Image (cartoon, rainbow, N blue to C red; front, side, top):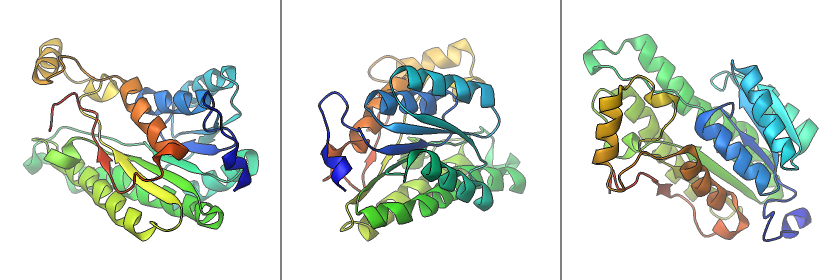
Length: 257
């Protein structure tokens, strides 16, 4: 893949196409901007918030990146296949896939309905499977690719009142490790980033006291930011990470060690 050999220190992802799911806000938006700044062409996926996605696209364009905004429900096979085909047509084959879209809901296990269980599994785990399966053939053909799954610290340690979410993210971690072994000789790496407590909409149901306690329980003394996660993703997306695969990297400020 000759185009991938033309890197610079300031734009190490020049010539590559990245798809970031759930990129209209929060961690996904920060990742999209980081990849754009590093020189990648960026496809920004959203499911409902078109205006926010378009705003992130404009910010990426201001950094010199070609972008496209793609609506798709990542738990729907037809949507995902359409999204990946449209990305290829407008930006080129995907060489960096960031499976970021996800959903969490704090609920007692006995109050977790089958519908909620299925919803969290579909968005967090099935969506990762569908997007990876759709994007992978082009990477195999090119013998190069970076698949980065956004997991959670609860996928490592488990979270009280987060059983369904923890199970789904634990599945993402297992998928990451297994697929990395399967693809080891193809030039494609598969890793996961498992954030700790990050100041995003996922914490919107917590009051000020709960947020303060979370900060105090984190050894570095603060909540994480979307940029903290984007920094980890940027390394895993780079050519320099070629010996890093099957790993679950957890930027969590020491919350789980």
